[in-house]
Image (tube, rainbow, N blue to C red; front, side, top):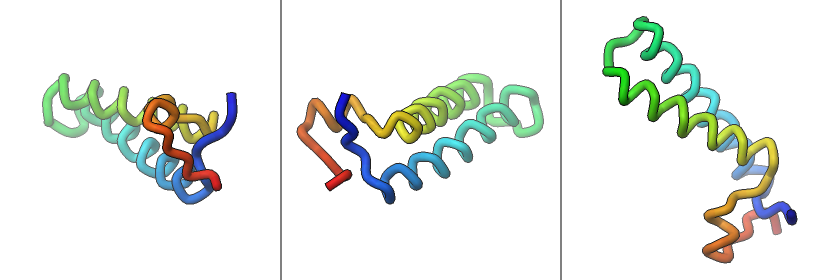
Amino acid sequence: MEHNIGLVDRNVRAVGGTVLAVLGIAILIGVLEFGTVVGALALVIGGVLLGTALTRTCLLYRILGVDTGA
């Protein structure tokens, strides 16, 4: 697959994904009290952001014809 995520987009996704994943884990283990659903959502969204940052490919961008890697 062709990459469609640029450097700035990739860095933002990596930082945001890491923050959300850590926040989700903290919620799920009980350090923060926001509810299990919020913790699970934060963890899943953080994981997706990290995954797209690592692969430099976003399926939604591909569908919409967006390319920030130019």
